[in-house]
Image (cartoon, rainbow over all chains, first blue to last red; front, side, top):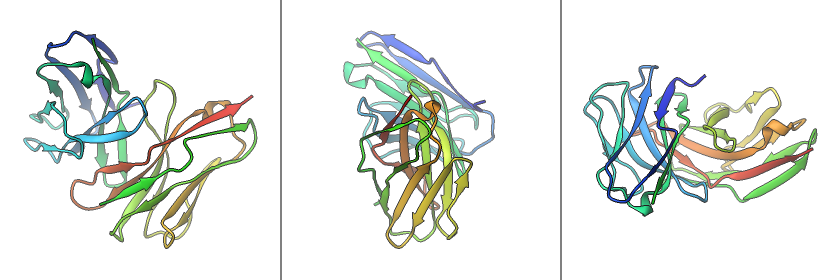
Length: 110
Length: 115
């Protein structure tokens, strides 16, 4: 059973809408990550956090933003969704030995 | 920069047979972790097996084992007695033990187990 939770599981939304993808973990991990998975299944790091009040941009440029006010919570926000944001978004947290992933949010912007 | 290469986009094998998925990587670090993750259709990423770079012994988890060749920077996954539930995308990944400790993924291998 997953200890990292993402909601919603699926989201279809219109262009220009603001959306927030939720990610919470119960493991007390300091490091958390957002990956974007394109239709070809490649995964790209878009944001990461070392802990509370720490956020950094990843390898792939993204118009999304993140926040880390609490250890367990790492939401991702798109201020104005566009069709190019259509993708699967995976949240993860890590300890030294590895990562735990959430179930992902499949976002479709129409 | 770290890179991970999976040269087999798709593979298929008969149920109960053995299959090997290939992975090569590049890193300038000496201390790192390697992983194989499984992603079934529309489901979350699941850790299959983990290898610490400083350990020479190949990791084994039930039907899953790796062939870790550090000098060659190769990390293949062998699945023995394959089962229908093994059908999934398989990703090889590398984690640095420094900095942001991000996972660098390969492009994946889509494995289909044929009944």
